[in-house]
Image (tube, rainbow, N blue to C red; front, side, top):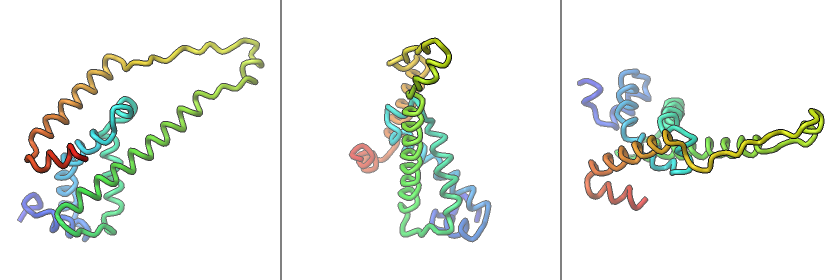
Length: 161
């Protein structure tokens, strides 16, 4: 039986034993399911600064490193674990962005007086660029399409969440 035909529980077990084919199939199977979760959980504010595919890759890398410690308790435990890893990556990246933004907005008066001139600060745009708007629109369309493909019960659960 090929890895593509195995149930998730068996794939996890084999991946934990070090079978590379099982590990690759497992992550390929779940990457498509976790990407929409990353997109939705990023929210509108962070979508302009972070890529959901980057969040997904970081979460899957973290999952790969911790797969031996993962305990499969049911069919849905893997997706819940991966969604939790996505949440952790988003939180970490949002914290980093917030700290970087605070650091970049600080201007030292000593630097300005040493040069003898005041620094010219260009105001930042308060609206997203046209390309960012287009990307957001495309992502929203993809999320809506993915939600439409879900069975009624799952769609309701996602929307309630």
